Image 1: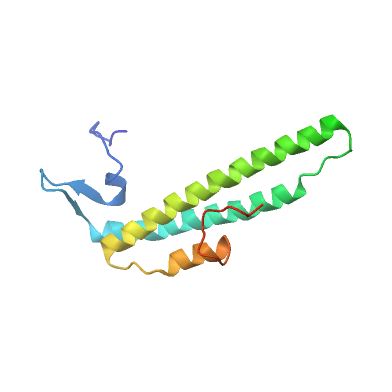
Image 2 (image 1 turned 90 degrees about the vertical axis):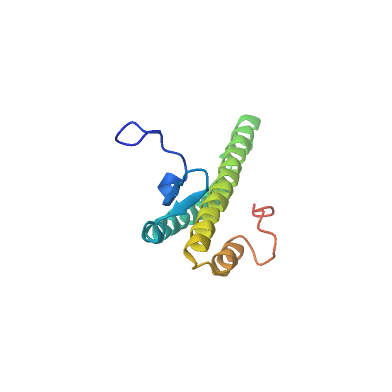
Length: 132
């Protein structure tokens, strides 16, 4: 990926970070503060998708008891479950970005992690296992 002038853009540029010689990175606090709500909206949309996927998984029923219909329903459910796993990975990725941006901006709290646990169950296990 390149910027408008053809210069390469790394993944940190979009996060308000820029390379500073060989000394590491510096960041623009205003740019990071502006990114946090965007990432939170993205995370919330992922959570909404999770609920839709859960609903879709609950609706997978073979239309008849014959083998092809049952096999089709089984494969459909496996596909929805794979989408749920992918959704979980995306949620973790988005939450990680939010946490890191908040740490960089000095506004990090444990609240977002607690909310994630609430979505995926009350236990400390947020792996997503046992959801379906």
